[in-house]
Each structure stands twice: as structure tokens, then as C-alpha cells.
Amino acid sequence: MLDIEGKQLSEADRKRLRHPLTGGVILFTRNYEHPGQLQELTAEIHALRNPPLLIAVDHEGGRVQRFREGFTRLPPMRVLGAAWDASPARARQLAQEAGYVLAAELRAHGVDLSFTPVLDLDFGQSAVIGNRAFHSSPKAVTELAGALIGGLSLAGMASCGKHFPGHGFIAADSHTDVPVDTRNYAQIEAADLIPFRDLIGHGLSAVMPAHVIYPAVDDRPAGFSRIWLSKILRGQMNFQGTIFSDDLSMEGASVAGRVGLVSVKRTASVPLTLKAFVPSVSEPVPVLVIVILVDCPPVVL
Image (cartoon, helix red, strand yellow):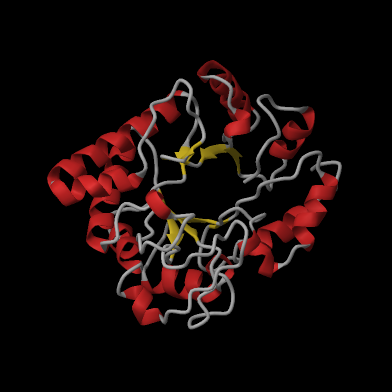
């Protein structure tokens, strides 16, 4: 999954997006000017390939909402958590309505998927997660995220739970650091994994792993770990949906190697933000997708 440079496609963008190894496009604030421009951009992207490329965005609400002007301003998910404390039934209703509005507006403008909901627990320690998390209670997170997913579904959008197996416990930001969570598996399973496990049982479409190392389980970040992705997520938790890597230019992904990312930046007119996916347990972990991409002729990229 690649990004593009501006508000319209360049010829270099078109070449990259037509490449058979490209599976989708992620949009950012820099790609948005107004609703009409977004509709034209997504229509052109979809017309490039058959079947069309998947168009996605990080559009959770609060500080992570890429499109603002002309779109409903969605609250941070912690607002729904506060509503839960007052009335769980009312909070579930609000969460479903938020999910519906979020998805309906994006779908009306040609965006297929938002990487939401955040399933991390709010331990009060992580600034990068912070009010993006619904609540500190696994039950509240499960119920509210489940209701939001229901709203997404009503508007025809899939869901992506993140950041597996949980990013909320540590203070370090994986955009700028390599976070390490020293808890053992039993501690993580008893708290952070509960929303993921419960929502997988209710049809969670996709999962995005955290660029966090959990050394008691594996010395590699979860997004590059066969233990976390194949053994635990696919095997023990029986998740059969898509696994999206988080942004591979983040510092938390650097331990998997920087050569691929440097090569891509040298052969492209704009640094690429990359997300990868693992369709099945038997296939490579996400970082291998980058190796394949870098080996493509520079003229194609």
C-alpha cells in the first residue's frame, strides 16, 4: 500500500499504482483540499486498475482525522469512553452513530477503508495513543469498538483493529522510537488481547500490528513477528482476515532494516509511506513485501 505526493496523481504516481505488486493507496491530509477534489482523486485511482485498488485513510476522529473541511468533525474515542461511564447503552448508540457517519462520508467520497478502531487500552501512559483509546477497561473498549464497527458495517465499510497486541501500556512513540513492552504474555493476554479476541469472534475484518517489541514473547516487533502474527493471531486466536502493517517508515519498524526503505526512496520521486499485508498464515510476514517491491525496476516505481 503506497501513498501519493499531492492532491492529484502525477505520472510517476500512475506508474507506481499500476504496478502489479501495488495493492492499495493510503491518503493523508496533504492529499486533501475539498470534497469535490477528493472524489475526483479517488475516482481516478479506482479507474487505474481492474479490480480497483483499495483506497484507505487513517480517519479515527479527534487528532487523527485526515479530512476535516467538508467532513463531520468526529470526537476522539475517549469522549465515547466518558459517555460509557455515565451510560453504557447511550455510549454504544453514540459509537454506532459515529461509525456510520465516519464510513458513510468516506464511502461517498470514494474512500474504501479507514484504519479504525483503535483497540489499545488507555493505561494513562502513552501520549501517541492517549485519547485515541476508548477506555482503560477491556470490556468498555470491546463494547464501544464493537458498536462503532457495527456503524461502519451499516455504511458498507470494513474495520481494522489496531495496534495488536496493544500499544497503550508504554510511553514511547513508535513513530520516533523503538518501544519495548516488558510485560509477559499472560499480562498482555489478560488485558490488551481481550478486545482483539472478542472482536475477532464477531467479524473484525482486519488487524494492524504495533511496531512494539515484547521481548518476553519475541525479540522482533509484533508486525514482523511470526510468533505474534502466525502462532498467536492466526493460530491461537483464529484470525482469518487481512493483516496490515503499520507505516514502515516509522522508527519502530527500523529494527527490521532500513535498506529497503532507502532503496525505495532513491528510486521514487517522493518518499513512500508503505503498508503491507499478510493474506494467510503460510505467507511471509509484512517486511518481505518490501523486499519484493525494492527489487522492481526503478523505472516502474
